Image (cartoon, rainbow, N blue to C red; front, side):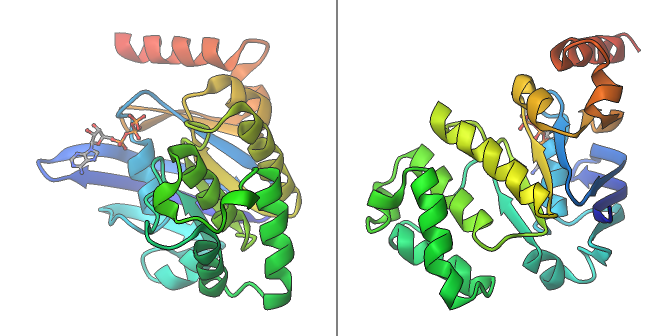
Length: 243
Ligand SMILES: Nc1ncnc2c1ncn2[C@@H]1O[C@H](COP(=O)(O)OP(=O)(O)OP(=O)(O)O)[C@@H](O)[C@H]1O
């Protein structure tokens, strides 16, 4: 399978010379769900923001389907969907207006819009609220709307920052299924999470970072062996503390 996301020697230094991420390398292939885990402040969001082209970086290269996020930002963004940890949507349009706007932005054919909106809104139980202003939505409803807006254009690369926080159990269940279906259709998913049980069950690959440095990366079986991902994570973090 081809590499959809390639991160090569990615390094980010914030002002004040703080190295938030140090020479990170990882690859996500078509068909793979890849979990990105690490303690608070490890560098996950910093990396994710660089991948989706909204944060500049100092060294290294990030490619989406072989295109550089620095040199071809529009091309990369056209193939990528991104949901931040706290989606900030336009308050004074309705849910359906937002979804149509996303369809316009990503050139979803008119004849497919209605069925795609219907499919995802029904699954995530948002259909009855699509006519309401987004300002009236709860946090979880905004998150569901952002998710529909991401899945609706069938991205090659889906990047999610803590997607399960704030979703009710039923929506989480359906999101996991939607993620797997998208990958089965040839997309790649890269997401951060602190919910290690979900990562363990859902993901093909996992990368653990600690203080901006890659500690482990590989298939879920390689990384966890016969242990739980939580046990492995705790051991890795403890070992790093002692170094
Ligand atoms: N705008 C900024 N300016 C300076 N330092 C920053 C900035 N944003 C993040 N950092 C620092 O970079 C490091 C990595 O932060 P980042 O938000 O990427 O971590 P994270 O792994 O996503 O954490 P969490 O799990 O808490 O969301 C932290 O030490 C943080 O303090």
